[in-house]
Image 1: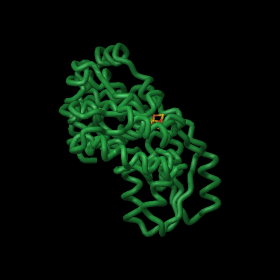
Image 2: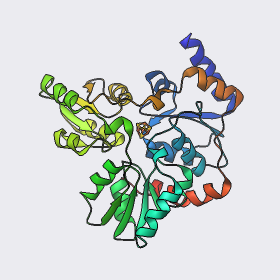
Image 3: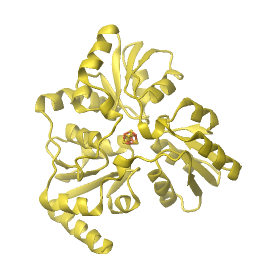
Image 4: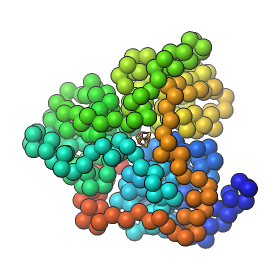
Length: 301
Ligand code: SF4
């Protein structure tokens, strides 16, 4: 059954001149069918430069919206329209504007995990890979950082700028199970624990390194350590195992995002056949958000 679905998707992809992008948190079978697997920054850059006329985005809604903002002439499909992100949903324009009124000299740096209309009110977007570089490159010593408080705290500890942090969090990472991380470290005393900056600061204290998903990939590639405990969404373990079959990986912290698991092979196939659901934004919002998103893709992490 799965083989039939895979060959159907491959045929439809050619017929529709489509490219399939998948985030590293996607389930194994989705990562395997994708043309590109990566973090938000990598996928945004591919979305901006692809020559395919259709982009099938296997991730959550804000990611597909970002692809549409960067490539408005392309058809961007999100095979499961209900794949949302609770972190993105925790910020709305009126509340951000109230914070901007409180700090009128601050520039807003917005984590890309946010809605398009909020991006439109921001100076620049960032991902976990380049958040510090975006904050440092912003032409102000005062920054509003939203919506992830853990990433904001992580950045503020490395910057001399005054950073006002929005009190939002990724539900999956913020409740990372520290006891599970400790137990894995006891089981594998020679292993290194890598955690995502969306996890709470107490997890950073345990970890050997705090990194976004792209950073984890580079870190493992440059390390001579054999075993790693991965403190981010469990899909990342599959990606690392594929990239580094000579190393050993296990999950740490029981971090699971239900929204990242909503896309299935059947939904990709249906989406490609019918060319829907299409991501659409109000053109004014899209144009206003473009500057903030473009700044994000220009800054190297
Ligand atoms: S892992 Fe967290 S930030 Fe990422 S999509 Fe899921 S809820 Fe949103």
